Length: 253
Image (tube, rainbow, N blue to C red; front, side, top):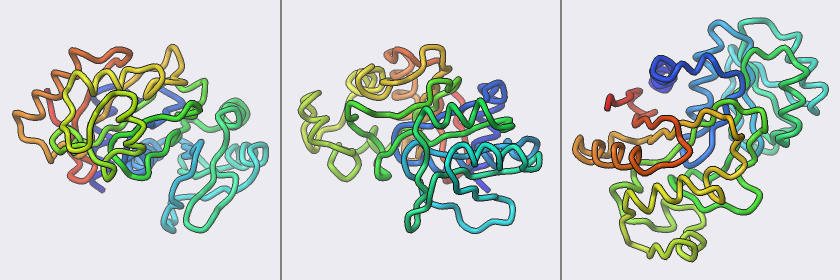
């Protein structure tokens, strides 16, 4: 699968294997990245995928075990799962989505199960590439040691609208960004670096990576301009990567 290629390249580039609890936040592409990382690490480990919000229930797959139970029972079932294995843990199922755990319940799973790696989708954006945050978001587990923030590259080359920006009106109020405007690297860096937006609730010692997804939409010149421009302006991030979950490629820069 092309997504698994991205997981492998991200691991090779940033040594993700050193992190036990990886939380994925930000815009559209989170679920695909979470499962790509899960499948990649589950070739050798007992891996748990879960969420602190809601995420689409995985398709039936003989290689994925779906565990639906309160956190205490989930921890017991995870501990008896084989290794290597890929386990999706949730509190309950509602139609086509799984309902996850609170950040504190994820902490319980981490401390009381034999999971060798936990990968959490810790945000929601309704599939949009950029978002404005409410005061309680994102619900990142406190012991997260790696946070991957996903940004859709379409907001780098297309005007911002309510179709690609979740809670566009709030973003407009906070940053005076008008509908139909293209966002500058400076404005985008300010939003991504804000402790009241993307980095709220980010654990102090977490290793933070900005992953620009859908980078195939950008020309080579645009990729270089935005990636280098963001790297120069971002605060609070350790690394920036541009890639495509669809094509399975990470661009070198």
